[in-house]
Structure formats: C-alpha cells, structure tokens
Length: 206
Image 1 (tube, rainbow, N blue to C red):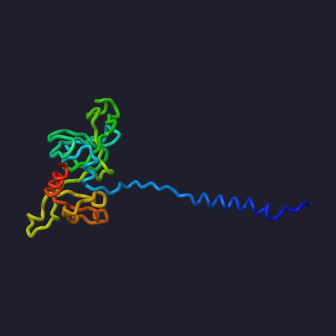
Image 2: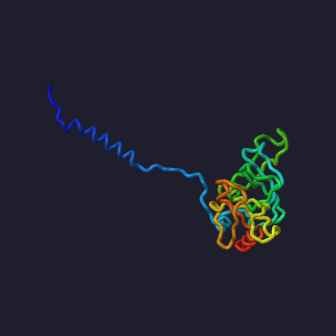
Image 3: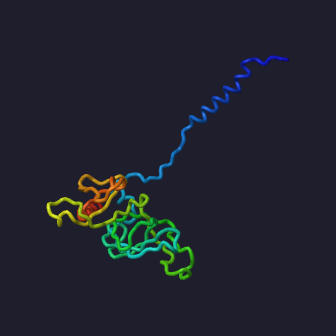
C-alpha cells in the first residue's frame, strides 16, 4: 500500500482552518433602532412643520396607523395660526393635550382601510399627513406641574415642556428641572418652563 506524504494530509486541514478564521473575522453589522440625539435648532431646520398644537380628535380604527387631528395654536414653521393638521403615527398622545411638535410631511399621505362610511366615521383620505420626527421624541408634551424654582407654591407651579434630554438636546440657556415622577424612565426627562421654551423657539425661528 502506497504511503501518502504527511504534508498532503495537513494542507486541506490548514485551508479549512484559515477559511473559518477569515469568516469569523469579518465585521458584523449591528442595526440600532434608537433615534439619535438631536439639537432643538437642528430639529427646527429638519422639520417641515413646527407648532404648538392641541389635539381635538384621533382615529386608531380606520387607518393603518394612529391619526390625530389638531388645531394650530402657535406656529413656528410651515403653518398658520388656527390651521388644522393631521399627524401620527404613534399611539400615545392624549386628546385635548397640547404639544410642541416637529413634523415631517409624509410623501404619500394616508387613506382609510375601507371606503368612507363602511365602518363608522373617519377623516377620509388625507393627502397632507405629517409624521412625528425621531420616533415620537419630536412631540413635546405641555403640562402643568409643580417642579420649578421659587419660594412660593405659585412660583413653583407652572406650565412646562417635558423633554427627554437624552434625545432632544437643549441649549444651556434653557434651565431644566427634574421630573416629578420616579423610575429609570424619568432620569432623562426634564422640565422647561413653557414661557422660556417658546421664547427660545421664537428667537431661533426668525
């Protein structure tokens, strides 16, 4: 029986080992779904519409995503006072609530799942539909709370903007106050007095 040279046996094994090492050494792509932090000024530049709005109604039944109808209270970009807008798509905004919103115009608009009147009332086709930017962080709630500075209760209680400062980066000129809630989700949440925040918005929107 003929003997096989030792080197011939080891060459295939070495090739397989080298191939395995080269495959494992290739970089793997990791997709991060969390929205990136963004400065308020950059949000204003990137948005198609910026305004303080009040949500007057909503529909989560007849569309593929949540649709909110809102009245414009104070515009900063892309809309006039008293105008009506439709936006979405996140299911977390309260009816009657006021928000400072940074919105991007949808390219396709949105239509109901079924013809109008088949399954109740809806808004019908909405050609001018807006999307809240940065995975929902582009809508800042305006609420009343007692977290602000002052010697008297009347000074400590005021309307303010709730901001996740990890996602929406504020300038140092805006004084922030700790959240009144507890837990890990409140650590990145800060309050800014409404008057101070909107005054800043007026300045940078001119």
